[in-house]
Length: 147
Image (cartoon, rainbow, N blue to C red; front, side, top):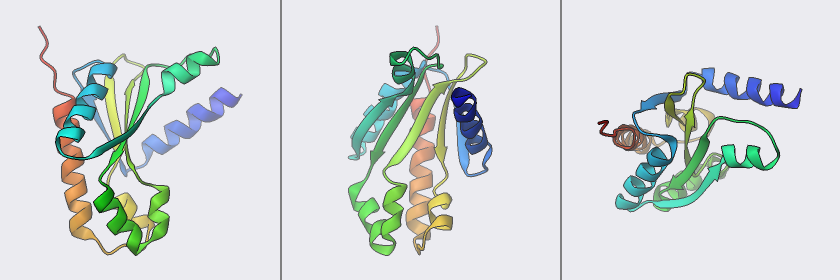
């Protein structure tokens, strides 16, 4: 029952229109490595990688490959939190990389307007910049050459 509730919650959150899902031509680990490398090359900080698949396995549960990359720009995050401290609940930024039920690797992340719509922010240029960066990061991270 617990497993069903978690799956339903995840499904409902992915239906929301503020979540962007893109396909990767790489496997999960390569996509995650690509994201880390791109983010670091941009001077951003990678704070953590959460291995949801590994965590499920550690409690004898099955879950498709799934890793969360948590990263950010402390300068941008601080500027947003100076406007509304509660933005810190939704930062740092995250990209979920997972294998879907059709064995396709996907990357999911929230559109930056989600922050602006749920917090007291006046930062349209910062949000636009964040959205453009997330699009570029995920597009590049999901590109692998297939033989």
